[in-house]
Image (tube, rainbow, N blue to C red):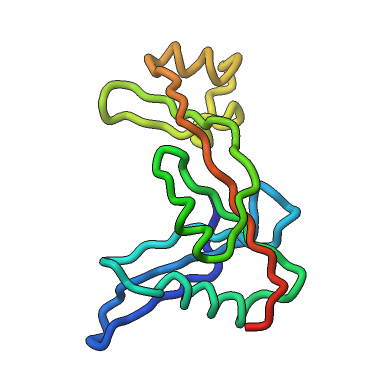
Amino acid sequence: HTVAKIKLGLFDKTDTLVSVMSFGKALFNKKHEWELIRYCSTSNVVGGAEKLLKHFIRNYTKNGESIISYSLNTRGHSHFYIRLGFSFERYSEPNYKWVKGSSDIKTRYQTQKHKLPQTATSESDYMRSQGYHKIYDAGNSVYIKEIDETL
């Protein structure tokens, strides 16, 4: 959904990429300037997320700005966000996907009415007529980090 504008990485002593963190402009909530889109690492990189976030804040943000991020409720990552200084804001509404068979999956963004044939009366009617089933997830936890620190 969001295109990462800033992609930061950590490399080990052999110049192997071991951690990545990406950021973009907040898409769904305009009260916040930034969104932490993804973080991943190849192994347990001690302090990796903290280093990447600190670099991002120092080089790309201003005091008074904020970062929003979303965590799938099915994967409980609250400890990660709390460790990085984010605060829990709220639970989002459940999301959904359209599924046909075991491997044909469409996101709600792929099936918005304006992307369907003009003859479609609604997203739900059209997708059901094509043999898809609407499957809901558990929603997201929403975390916020206010930038008010000098790093």
